[in-house]
Amino acid sequence: MLTKKKKLSRKEIKEDKLVEFYYKSQSYFQENKNKIFTYLGVVAIVVIAVILYMNYRSGQNQEAGEHLTKVMNLYDTGDFLGAIEGKKDVKMLGLKEIVAQYGSTENGETAKIYLANSYASLGKPDEALKYYEDYSGNIDIYKAASLAGQAGYYAFKSEYEKAADLYMKASKVSKTDVMNSDYMFRAAVNYFDAGDKDQAKSLLKTIKDEYKTSAVYSQVDKYLTQLN
Image (cartoon, rainbow, N blue to C red; front, side, top):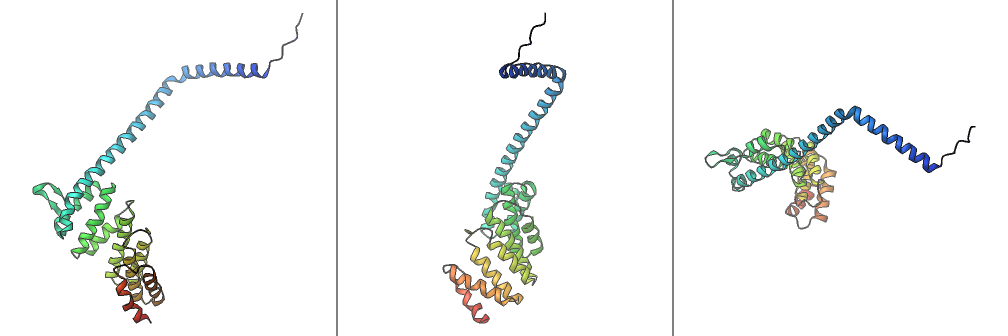
């Protein structure tokens, strides 16, 4: 005699599916355990490699900072050639070598700016431009200095409008950069030399209104007088 099949509850259906999933998972694991262990091993290797790389980068940046601190003594005293080349007798790396070895670190990027400044101070604008353009660090004052350095190069080449545009970009990198008024003034002078009198006048008035305590404030009226 046939008996009426019992209707399963929702709870029993869920439990039944869970049991089925468990056994299927067990079966899949047994069949593919070698592949799974290999995959997990690869993931672990990648994670370890990333950690080691980050530690290496951190160590490289610290080394670059130590070398940069030593050579800055020469830079600050105006010995730009010495700062570029360093001193082998006391194992002091120059800025050029610091950039070569550590250029991809943050301190190595900073060294590019001082290296460029040194070349500019020695009257080697083309060498300076190369390192100004090569800067790709994350520090705002050096981003601005990089743009201003490029602007100085184009001003030297009498490409005044290009120089002015770069000085303006430099002045907008960070609102807190103490060099902003200087960058704006240089932009104004280059717009003036490029024949863009309106832009030059606008910038000079901005400096006069907003940067009354800046070092360039006293020079503004000289140009405004010529524009008026």
